[in-house]
Image (tube, rainbow, N blue to C red; front, side):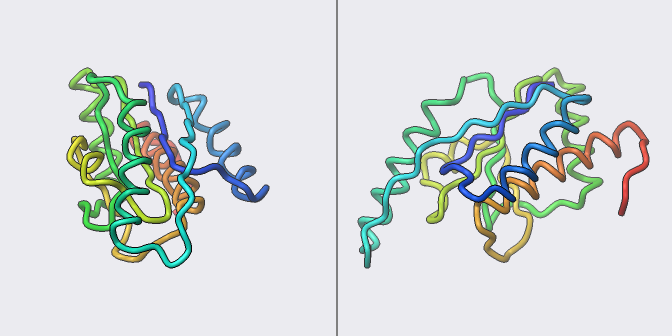
Length: 159
């Protein structure tokens, strides 16, 4: 299975990079993982709603340009479907059985995702109704993907 994490912005703090690298290393035994960062668009101070939409649209164009038609796209959105770790594992297993080998998880920037990116999603996933920094979300996502592979292979992993 080929898994891509497509994220707006780069990880600036070393502790986020270290955690991401650790889970990427662990995932190497289970899948081909690629992390691709899209440059975030600067947000004007005291941005109007129209300016915020323009930022999301610009980031959205870059995200959409990075996708292939055959990609199974899972966007991370507050209004997405909440799943347990076991249900996410089941979903990834089902996708593999269906022959969907290219899975792309999209993490938006600080303003979220454009309507166009959300519309492209095959699945909208929410980890919580709370808002998390997108840097932290990358680590949480990678941990849950790793946990999914461990669950699907009946391997022990801490709870």
